[in-house]
Image 1 (tube, rainbow, N blue to C red):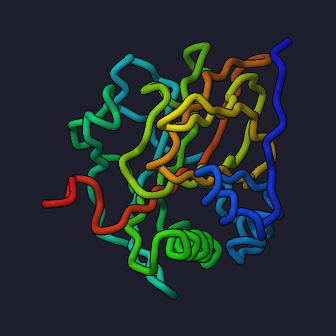
Image 2 (tube, one colour; image 1 turned 135 degrees about the horizontal axis):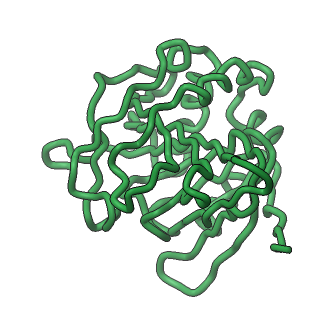
Length: 248
């Protein structure tokens, strides 16, 4: 039996102090909703879209275990604007497995990207970023993921423990069905400290300072038959999207 360690949840009001102290904060769904000013019930209409994600054709390990959609947004002080659809690009410095190439994924469905609860989620997290690093537009890449056990094992982070090359990363668990594993691990980028825990409740949040910590999720295996793990990953970057001229 694999031990499951409880997340180090904090109240909404302690999220930013913990970010300053540790470089990451973990919030239960209710605290996340309170902190970003979104109604949990209003997020429910987004959930069916995870059933319509497209296969990831770029996995270099030959796997079939990942489905995803990807869109980009610019989050201002009080508005969210969807950017033209673009490839997802990361430097090899941050993703030695899949970096250095343009990966084109199907965009997030318009009904999701335009939903008021979706926009409030991005806006609220963008406000956290501005409190921590100064008010500015934030360039957000949004990734809907489903990792399944089609191959017997699914790898949420096949690149291993990593940074994303951005300022902040929000990892929201959307659902776990029929799996074991999928443990979240966070490590200090410049030291030995680390923590491991398993997110289980929908819309629980891990919020990271990408300069200070590295992170990964362990592989998943089925409990009985096929299972899956759904997440929403939002990266926040100042100055432009990765791959833009002059931004890296």
